[in-house]
Length: 127
Image (cartoon, rainbow, N blue to C red; front, side, top):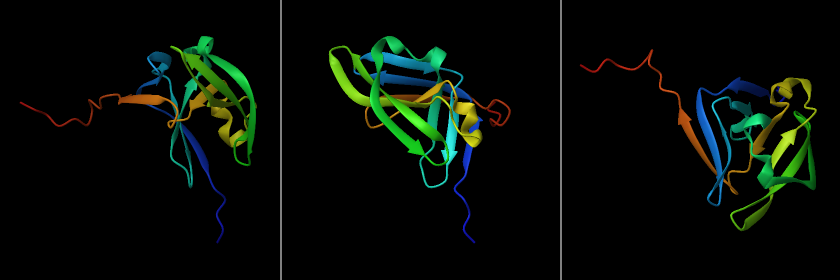
């Protein structure tokens, strides 16, 4: 049976900070985690929590059959620059609609720091 690759999007409980060179380029407690079969999970950060002063749109586009058309952004900060650091699906397909107005960053080109929210409900009692 051939199962179609699936995309799921869920809220991430915790904080996500994206650094390039010595600059923080995004920081949020409202990240989404997109999981797609056959790929590593990807954090998507709301546009309102991305510092677009460091970013400009590149000419790069990529069409994903499950998410839609992605547009890419380049970055320059603290005297360093990199192409196609961030992408976003501005008009995502229905199964990825939650990532509209969110951007994702290439972990090979930026440093992504993730701090999960402490699970107080399931933490063992320590006297």
